[in-house]
Amino acid sequence: MTFNAKAVCLDMDGTLLNNLNQLTKESLETIQTVRQKGVRVFIVTGRSLDEVFDSAPIDMELDGFVTANGMITYIDGEKIAEYYLTPAFVQQIIQSAREHQIYYEAHPNDGQRLSLEEDYAYMSTLINGDKPDDVGLHEWLEREAAMAGDIDWVEELPDQKYAKLYCFHPNREKMEKWIKVLEKMKKQQDFTTSSSSYHNVEVMVEGVNKATGIKALLNHYQISPADTMAIGDSNNDIPMMQYIGYPVAMKNATDKIKQLSVEKTLYTNHENGVHHYLEYYLKNLSN
Image 1 (cartoon, rainbow, N blue to C red):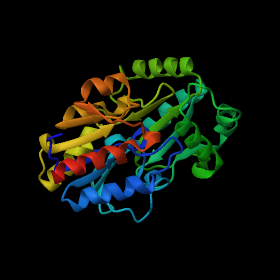
Image 2: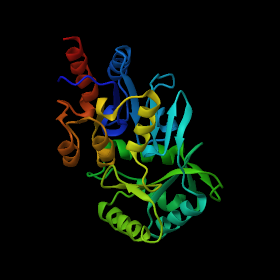
Image 3: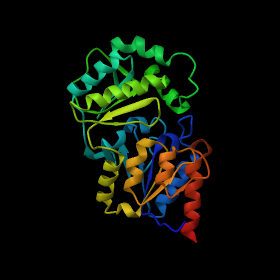
Image 4: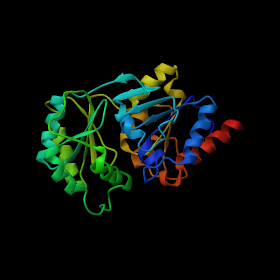
């Protein structure tokens, strides 16, 4: 490797985190060593900021966070870019999700994720029992944790800004049908959808994605996309990989991500792939 990055963007699920949604001590230490070399390090994730710290130390120091697939971008805990869905639009999507018995979480720009109390019964039946073989372990564990206490069950949807709506179904065919419903809805209203697995889809503001948030961070630090590296694994990372100069695919990445990347890690996310790759990167910086 001869690329000298001025910034590194790291996806979380399937990339920085292992399959148990854990950030290992080795990965955390390697990230900080990269920062000590003068390289900016950003988390770029579909998670909300609160969800980031479900799996990372609350005192973790980084140079920026792109959350909810680009909907909100933070530096030092302060928002530098923010987009939102209206309550009326979120309610419209929820109504359709309920009709199709789709698990959903409404993610406010500030505060805990929400679902309607009356939908607890059918949503809990989707998560109860054994994990289907084709559902990723990390996604299943996140849903179990959400149902066990991470969701705030409300009678009515509060009037506030919403970063995204996350939808899930353990049956892949039913999720595919739901995504087709959303595609039809796009003909009447502009919004973006993004999936990180065959079992989920997230609804966001039209034209907003991970690259949107990265652009805000790079503008702030006056860094060119050409001088930026990104490591990712799933198709919601596509805008990020297309935007920056040096895209790196995880060994466990989708075929599309691998096609967009200049190289791939030797190890998967569950094998501490980011840690090993960044160690390799640091050695090349020293040579």
